[in-house]
Image (cartoon, rainbow, N blue to C red; front, side):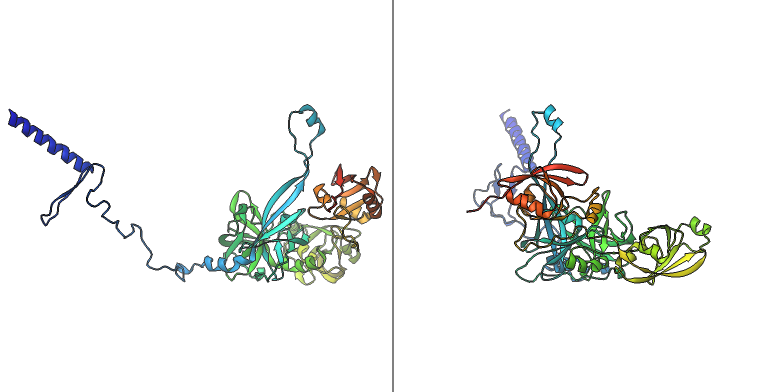
Length: 502
């Protein structure tokens, strides 16, 4: 019976050993040259040569045979990497901040005394993009990126950061010109010709979306001449290159590295529907922004509407092109030249008017005081009238005369409210002074004053003019209480005298 037990134990041992080998707990190596076999214990250690086996040097992935990328991409696709490397040094990220004074209704404080309402000035940061157009520091961006901000910092691809100042702004086209003072010439991007752009062309957008600096996206021109309801001069390039918040003011480039548009607006429901201001629009206004800080546009003095097929048939026009005059401003240049309601403007200064929306753009681009011929249809007959163009807009706020002694105390400049400025600001009558400049970091800035604010009172007394305000501020020992109007809201502002430095 003993030999049966030995057989059973032997069979059981073989089965256990086979199970351990099959599960990998024991590895047996047998040399074919009759060398002694080796066994590795259950913990995977080789007592004679631990780790003697080296890993396979060949990777398990498909390795490229060349270390450098192909010079030409398949199927004629463009190499966006070369383009991005070329132009990115001329693209900048713009960081701005502005001060906000939270207004909390008094009744809220009375009924919720336990709640900690915000007080004082709060700095609100914002992000945008821009691009260098001249080596001495001029940079183009959107007006809404730098409008009513206290500070502007510009960051370049190489890590350089510089403070910038606003040279000029044009809210109607959403274009702004700012400037930095570089220590060395900057890489400027060349401006292309947006009139040559065609739908379907490859384009690249570079900017600062969501704070992700120098992000590169690519797509095509989806359409031209888009009107998105932003204003009378809408003429946008539509692109499917991804544009997101923070891309505003950045360049839209063709494959030659030329700027053909300024990225300005998006459809919030899709990141592949973006809009750019054609660069040719910017070319017409940048010289004015540099020289005067604002844009002066021609004024015809008519209200117009689109000619529909029904209108064309009812008026027996025989065509649907042109702009139908629905009203003539009696004080405008058109009235003086003899234009009448019902006239259809076909040409302006030699430029054919195909769509109604084309007329405001060509009129605005014409020089103030220029004599232009306007071709109209009236009662089925064509006639040409000569118009001397007026000025569409007064400057938003003319700069105050420079004080030879530098900025006024408290870090702001003001000018008297003239009847023209009162009308522009919606004031019932002239009076007080209007703020035309606020220095970042000054007491006026810390108090929340902005360009365009109207100071009505100082020290609980009415302000007659700029000289009156200046004397009141100079006489204030610690500060002065101002009564200010901003839009339709009036409020008190405490203006503190800056601390003397010893």
